[in-house]
Image (tube, rainbow, N blue to C red):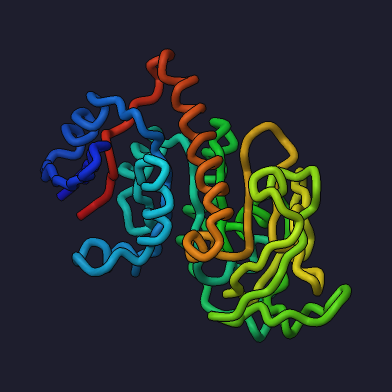
Length: 294
């Protein structure tokens, strides 16, 4: 059974569910209402999707909360979704958010697995690369966080350190513990970058939850921030479309470091601007809220 979950834009933001057995009818009804909020892809793993469908805590709740803050509407994607549903939902998108997660399969950047490589998820990789293809074709803004940042780099032809302790030596300064969980470290943000324009500082303390990192930089990308030992902490595309990746987790820092909210605010603003530019053409229609299988 296909279901579309619609979330209102009212202050209460009550959720209600329409269960429709006919997929064609569901898509038709979804296309009847044009949302004022931009539709943002949020990509769940198969396991995360099972938790969401099972009524458990939303595994990506912090990402949703950040998008909700700026009145974006989440459109759920997962490798477990029916291909026809994925195709239909792609047509609703104004932006793509790629969250943190497992390692990227090194086959996508032409390397054999290192002995320190951890869990990979090929269906997830393929889905996220497909969404990036769609975003590039339609000029959609993209925000990548942790794994998502790494996926962006690989998509544009870059590669990764499969394990920082095993493969990376500090370029300068003291070594940084990048997989610290509750630990934090400083990063330096390059002036004249989008990151600098958004955060307004050249130094900021971030959290650290990763064991992989950008090695070879992807084509058309620039490095906008590094940690003190030289690890790439942020990348952005040099073109006109908003494409930004950060190695840290801003969705977990929004209270302690409010400046990171600017990343989500600008991303959603770019998606909203795109939605409004396309709206008069009548080519893109959006459901008034979240679309997912439940």
